[in-house]
Image (cartoon, rainbow, N blue to C red; front, top):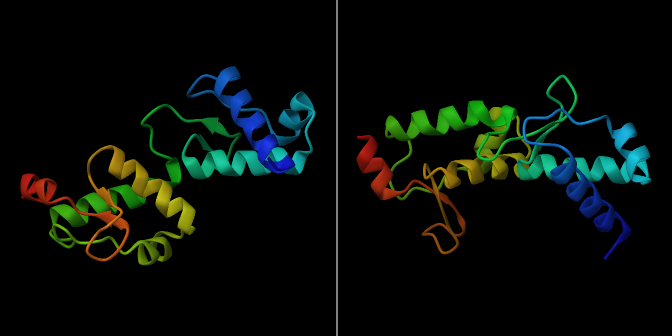
Length: 149
């Protein structure tokens, strides 16, 4: 295991055991001192946790550990738009979502779009299909579209 990967595991373990969901986290510098790790490695660990939706970085304050099933604050506009578009039949049952276009529209990087779509999948708004008609991707479930109509 690479040193950076090991550092990310240490950061993840520390945050998930020392800070309850909803708690503010210390600064990157303070975490680096507490864990005796280089600040750049701690920062990379925090970025990974942010992309997984376990913490929220860059919200105008200190990082926050997210609660289970709590959407990332930067993803809320995308969540609402996808739900609204499904209700309005803009996205049809069985249709793959245009992840690249959504990222551009909402100013999200590809891994942030994936984080947002994983959340919508976990709540049943979307489904991930490895062998979908248009390749692997997030699709509008047929049953959901019928229930929303």
